[in-house]
Image (cartoon, rainbow, N blue to C red; front, side, top):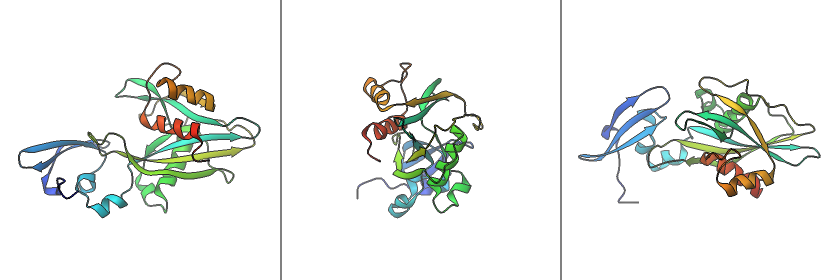
Length: 219
């Protein structure tokens, strides 16, 4: 820990800056550079946080493990097919999205964002009979390239009847192509195969949702 490179704000240079993605040059030693693709502003960059700031920071986004627990039916995991532009495919995905400024202002920013994303991407509004719990407060996906992070949240919908799911609330560049409501057996097969039912690879957060559902670790 004591020998780690320390990066100060004055050692960071902006390479590219846009609304949703930025690239910074982290000059951790004279003449040595490491490039960071990020969602964050230069003032909020993970690389320049001290230990306490790092431990207290909010994730960039939330990914949701959504389980449909309908009376007299086998529980099902709700996944969707979302078009991911860098992959050029509709990938099997969980309801997910960035924490907005209004989320960050709430008492529980992660839960507030999760409930909003659930409504936007599935059309489902959380009810009193449902439950929401934190699986992990912040995980990095590819820290060798980006400091982007997600919180993992499980939402269990305890209903008398199967709720109607809809993707009509999609906003901006979001593009969807239907849902998969998986039984544990179907989810286990996707985990074992390493690809979805259309033989396509899927994101890390989808793998995490499948694992949570199959193992029942958060029941």
